[in-house]
Length: 410
Image 1 (spheres, rainbow, N blue to C red):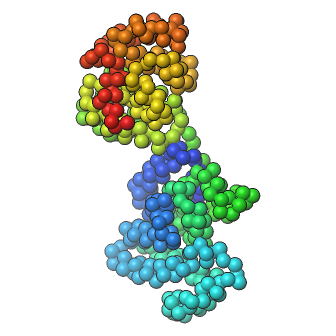
Image 2 (cartoon, helix red, strand yellow; image 1 turned 135 degrees about the vertical axis):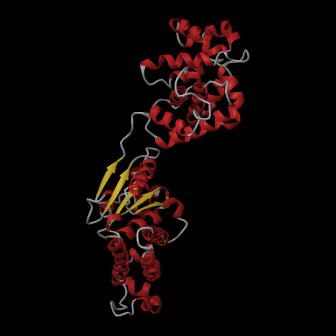
Image 3 (tube, one colour; image 1 turned 60 degrees about the horizontal axis):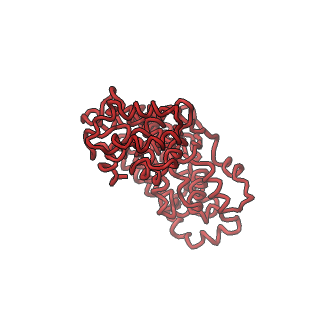
């Protein structure tokens, strides 16, 4: 960040769930640890306001106050109070996008109010685009004052999240406000967007043939793409460990798959249909596994629990059919489709075994022979009769026993 001495606006691009929020929140923590002035701004939570700048400016001033001496805070607040009323007028979308011939008409009724703010002789009360410069210079002055008091905390970094979830007019207003008012050498914006979603929203506003790429290039110096991680299971396991399931004695960090974090993570990833790199979905699954595991207590397979949670995210109908017992070839066929690689065959076998009651093997053997093939029957029977299945407290399958305890949470 310190290399951007002239300021910058950078887009952090990635699809929904790809980890943009995860990246920004961790970057925020890292920057704060380095003593850099940092603002995390959730645009979606702020689009209730017609003027996003009022919310953002408030967050920026509050952050700057943490990096200046206490005696200077009141001076900073005084400058901010002079700035906010001007911003409230010049940052509105209708004003920023108005043509030259509309400025006098739009700003005319505000002559008296705005004139009192700029009557100190430093600038005239000429309106239109000049007034935009007044607001920008006022903001620049505030940032420079804070920087002069604590240069090590700069550049100020503003992390903008969830912009692509806001309404189209709000997005346009925000981007144009950043361009017109925050072109300061000591402010760096990192704005997370799903480029496909933003393209749709902007075209909805300006028309299907609108040059979105050219439009966005006016605002961003360059773009950084979120790279899809390959360690979904490792990420999920770490998230489960951080939730305290091991320290609270519910799961183990090693050992048998049916009592371990590894089992819960692997089962969940299989239920999700394999790794995808969607960290938001993995975080949601980790939260759900944590709640379900605590509600179920000991005696429930962590792997089955993880699988049911993962399946509930992707195919709730299949989850309930599976938990009610494997009674049709279609159920097994649907489970087989979750396997992405040849070495996932053991997961298919294991899943089938967990869905078969200990005392129903003979009745369902035909289903296994038909759906998985005769050559897989020994593997499934071995899993069914192995020690991992024998702790089931009844003749029901592991899947149905687990579902009885956590189904109301799924």
